[in-house]
Image (tube, rainbow, N blue to C red):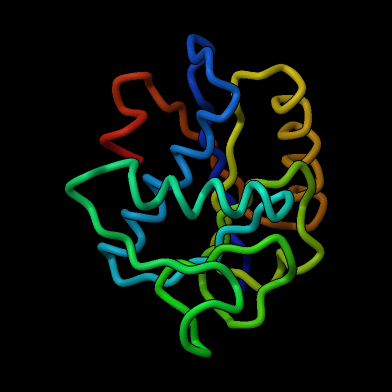
Length: 152
């Protein structure tokens, strides 16, 4: 199985350095609607809590069952959030960290982001190179500002 990595390039017009967190929520909601379980891998516990809260509020019309690692039942919700390697196997990883996780090859698909922030953009370039060196299949998608919330 070759891992497929989907990079989403966010608009340079975004002033918020956390625009990729909202995009992670959009993708998580889309995966849930397709009955696909995913793991959102965060930089630290604070970011995990931020995503947890954002998933409750980013779209008042959408309910996305989710939990932090260790909460809920043993199998976790459809969308699980954590800053440590996952305990449950899932087909999709949403990577919010600045590094390629050492467990990335366990996934069929990885969703990653290229934020507008120049430092985060440079980290994304490095991840792209590392994914490529690992033999993963790579695709890049431009996310238009008006699509940022409604599409992925």
